[in-house]
Image (tube, rainbow, N blue to C red; front, side, top):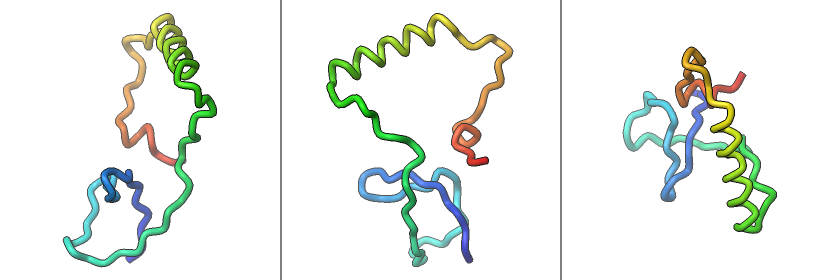
Amino acid sequence: MSARIDAVFEGGVFRPLEPVNIPDGEYVAITISEPLTTPPSVIDATERQRLLQELVREMKQHPLSEDAQRLSREQLHERR
């Protein structure tokens, strides 16, 4: 069997983002790919905090409309 499974690495283990049909104790081979996110280029904690506050301010100025499509976590991370 070969399948692509998206997972998060937490606490030293890979946690699948969706249920998988693999029996407990089954041996699998894992290939690690680059993460989909880019690490922040701002290293200074004060500057990062300022940028986050600015982002929140902008988001509050432009809230989603009541009829905006709501996406699940899976839909947000879906590769197209």
